[in-house]
Image (cartoon, rainbow, N blue to C red):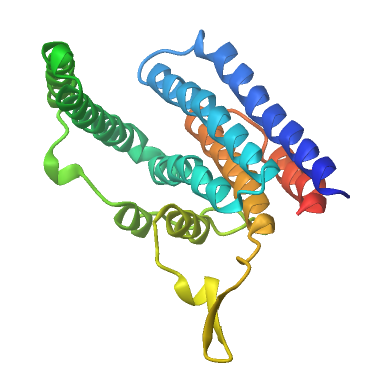
Length: 247
């Protein structure tokens, strides 16, 4: 299968999986009640936002920018890892979801405070919104001690049945490496006859395909687990029989 056909197929498969999950979650959200209603809102938000990153990652592959594509997949994989921690133990979902929301509010407050420095003429507006986010976080009862790194969260995760699926955390680490400006001069330059000459970059296109497909699979899987929807057999079939042949 040619590169253009592969991208088109992966784009269709990823979009359809995200769209299908989004439609199902929106349909059932109307029937939900607290705290499940909040779970549906979280799932809907993440699926909707992920569409932009997945589409962007595919666009980067089209234009020959595999590193940029891998870096964009980081957002979706990080969301998946946080959801994995949230849903890993059924009796802790409400508590962990609250921590997840609290961290999102803290990040939002930091963003708004940064914008206030960037746009002084709108400082009062941004600071007011930042204060509101911090107030909501405080009302949730989330403490500073509740904050955990992804690595700490994963240590609390018990075995999750994803046999024959790609390992999630190593994929995330690859995305982080692509997002950081590491000085990989040994990859891009070599010595020939005592002269330093440039080398062609390592082609990471196949890795970029994996990131897009795996991040989509895991995000849908864990939003389904959070909302108690979805069919694990269908997700397994999507990975093994529909996406696997493209990778």
